[in-house]
Length: 310
Image 1 (cartoon, rainbow, N blue to C red):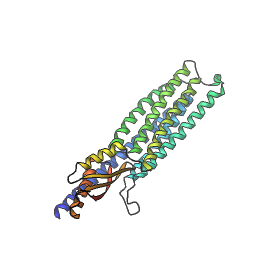
Image 2: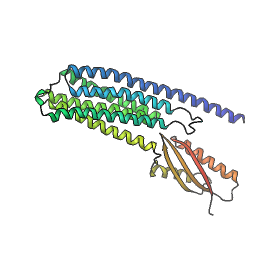
Image 3: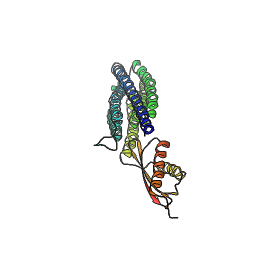
Image 4: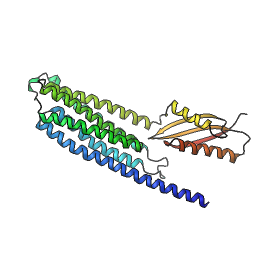
């Protein structure tokens, strides 16, 4: 009994340290995203207004949406890490899916707004009234590409460590901003070369990039909200693992479902029909523990034991 209590104490200590480390990373990534985007938004907005570039102003609006997106991602990830309680016995992982869906909606609305302004300028046909952007708008586009691509890789790195779909969505939000800045760079450059409408065309291109990312983020979040299966390949990998465990005769059924970023497994396996109940239970417990250890994304395995047909 003392040995068991000691192991539990060590496990609890490791868990607390892991939670502390995760909280530090979450706060750090969020701070970098919010502060970086606020500074970049201010610079791009100034460059867009002073340099008379509609594409750069649109780009600044996109960066401003990143500030709210990072804040939502921070809240979603933070709340999803809360331990299970009486009201939520399965945990809070799906809060992160809700955060991802909000990020997707923000991207969608931002993209449509930017595209609307660009299309109105293009369809007006009065290109002579369109202002040629200044050099500062071009400089802002280059700065934005470098900064936002760096923020993408930084956020993506920690999203993988945390296994966080919300932070991964936020990372793609950064990259969509980098793409939009590439569009701004091309549009502003084209306008400066004597084709003012290119600035508005760039806004429409930016819109398309943003809408594509919004679609991907919303699709992923919705799939995780609907208890979607983890796929045949993953289920076959689990089945093969269970079959190779001691005393398991065969696997009758195995189903998986996503719960936020975690996986729940329902498993039916056969053991020797002549084994006493306590031995059959021990086999099921060993399979349960082995699966959760081998596959870290698995949060829980429900094992049902059937007597073998032989």
